[in-house]
Image 1: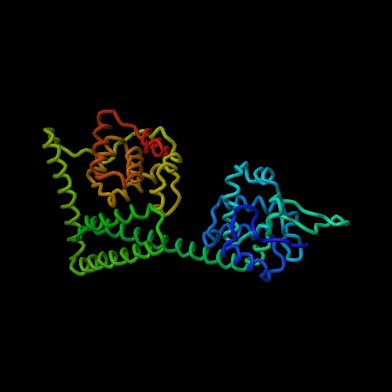
Image 2: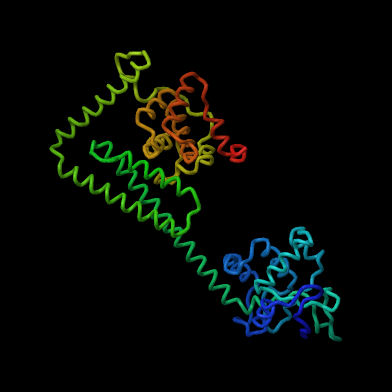
Length: 396
């Protein structure tokens, strides 16, 4: 097939980039033939390396559909010449002005070439046997020429994505280890800056809600490793200084007593003195009138802290009790919420607070405020969950 021109029709000027793309397209193909859809999917992965957008690729997909064969072959006619109307139809009704912009982007990226006719129309001239001898339209041969480059770029993108995934997994695991060890240190009565550690972990958790780059993830990983070293050092020192099992038993007994006395002081401050502690967990509470699956859909941030899929309400309650510490919610506030709301509703509330933790200045204070509403019979977790399912409503 004869190629007559590579200069643009009308007012479009010849540029250095156009000449460079034309010369590259006239070079040898990196592969003699290739499945066009496999190459297209690979290009979708590597699109950032070529400076094209998903909308540009929508137009390229439409152009490829006008090439009748499944493969792009170097010895075949690779010029397609659809009208704007036909191209728009296959590009999901894209406006003609938008089509022109995306076609120009594909040409500038060196993925296609223009071959404009004398009047700017796209068409093909056929010989006596019906074969195409001359065509004016868009040449797909640059895709064959750059096939190896496209594959290499896609491999680099996939490798970077895998690296980022592994880095994020490492940060998540380190964060989980640090959180559990901090809670262990608090429960065992070891002396250490546990609140400071919880604050640092909460800050890291907020950062991980963003789409972090590899460099940012590596920085968080180093920060967590340093934090874990400090925690291990404190726990090791405490273990070496600890006494017999009877000492641990005495400490556990005193800890419970202090907790109870603190509870009585808080009640006295309200003007209500109780002669015996209330049970930590209410008996006979009904489960929330909202499906567990809906709660997990609205609050996905709590699931990475579980070692398995959450399938039952008691599993969500246990997980909420686990994560409340890193949010700055005290044991006392958590127990009060369970008494006022019931364990399941309290767990739903904590999950909702975790989902919006970056917007809440004091998660512990917020939970106490909701607990007071629940004591007055004026709180239900339903609106909170539905608001999380409709982020655009929150933004409004």
